[in-house]
Image 1 (cartoon, rainbow, N blue to C red):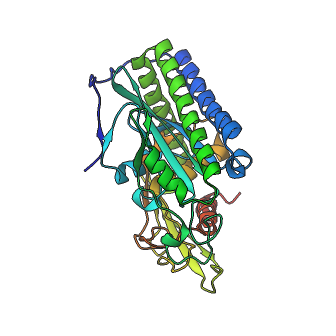
Image 2: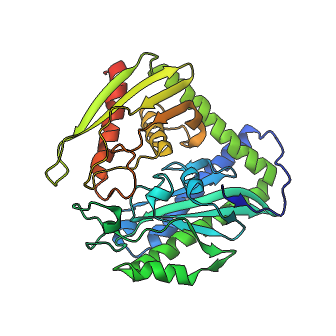
Length: 366
């Protein structure tokens, strides 16, 4: 059963036209809000992974959960698959479990937090952020055991929970989680820093809606998604051929004496739609090199790749996602079945970028 959004005002949003100047102002205001989210987080977090390395990723999405500004794509679709409760004004959700959110986050150290933003009883937007926690329990300090055989060895697993309910912190759940971490003070500080960043995003959204009007703000977010879709559609039609392209890459070794592991992908285009099929990729490993690749995450990698290569001025968001279909075999090293270990998944992550370069380079070797 899907999550139920509770709204005291269910009036549909009007289909209004936003003039280009107002649209650009709202776009840049959202870009700045995302930058402010980073600034708040980095100034208030305690852990060096977030404070110094900046291993955290913010997002502001529209009322449907489609990322409008951010850098890691929308987490909403994965969250929605793992949560079947109510969504209400003042709630904040927390999860670190890749398996209950279909890989929206890829290992247990990443704490994902999401907050719905309401205006006059209507859900108008989402703010979200995940940050890498230094330790979340498990068999070794840092919670990244290279010799793990199951996810249970890697730390505490938190399915999507309502950590803040209608503005009130669920202290019992937070204390339970922190009790299983070696550095609870760091994690508590990082948790509070992420909440502060989400609150900042909420304030900025409310300010924009008050200045320009709720209907205009919602319509502007939809238009930003549509502009991205048009721009990315042109790039995909130009670059991706209709004939199938194939590329294979490998991880030589998993550090435990096993390997190599093969990643195979085919790419082709049918009309305006582009397909990526990972059929032929090796089965999941009994070691920790598995990477639970979320389909939307792969689309995010693809979008960032194309935008940086062809036109960095394009606003990066989820607008083009329905132009791409990603097929990943269940039970493969890119779609492992729980309780497969995930703590060394970065080795496979690197191969994903090699796959994209190898596929696209066949048509444009220069």
